Image 1 (cartoon, rainbow, N blue to C red):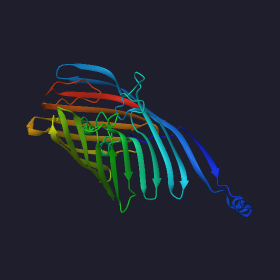
Image 2 (image 1 turned 30 degrees about the vertical axis):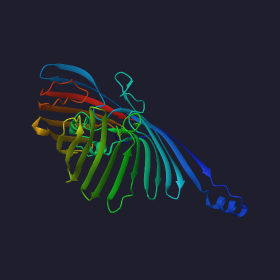
Image 3 (image 1 turned 180 degrees about the horizontal axis):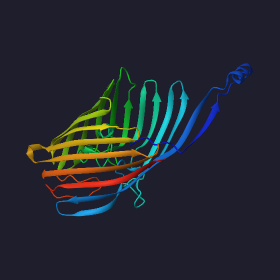
Image 4 (image 1 turned 120 degrees about the vertical axis):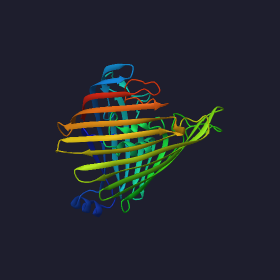
Length: 355
């Protein structure tokens, strides 16, 4: 989810109180020492029109969130002094064509409280899955409709409930994230169930034109007595800036151990993005997903053209081409459901406004 521009901010200060008259006089001359806090409201509305077809049917439809879901965001920060700060963020996702919330939760994206320190940041609440962050923000289009990262969703949950994350300071271009969820689902499991308990470690490194991330995460899926397995996911994804173009590359692998497992798969992503002119961005990406035991595969092509009308408003057009085989049933983002092995494609134009 892209950062949005705040529409307003409220700032207040709280002077330090001293009982020593001489010190009060000194503060009057030199300026009060104070902490500052701010609260902002921001968000985005993303709408368009599209044409989706499969081997057996087609539909013309209004599209929602084709770049990223429409959102309403409340966030705040308080400077606690000495490089400490308290923060919060509440992000609600919605479908502007109907006015409904997106999903089952009002704060369907992140809902978190954080404490920043010189030694790193700690956040708790409903957080992004580290794998999802890497897949989305290092994708060529950074877009739902034209993004090959959608081939991995379903294998993992984009958001983790009941989570705690530590992010280290950046040292020599590298930082580490460690995240644990007591249950990525609504409620923490009661022993002996371990359903939804998940952990992840991410390493991010940037040096010159290279921006590289790796994540290892493990989740427990437990619905006794027929389902009880661990999912182990590994991803490496990065970008390399070669001037006018940025290359994108990634590999995602999911393995399972236990009973009642879902199909394992591996996903390779390659792509390019660039800005031929100040107001234009172009993107192209390829995705190749292979299920274990040669059970099926998905080949994906995503193309995007983006034009900035202003700092806040963007016109865009995207194409999504999907070829399924075997057990694969990959659909276009918010498109028509497909049968096993059925091909599908989508074409759309849209507008996105950040506020």
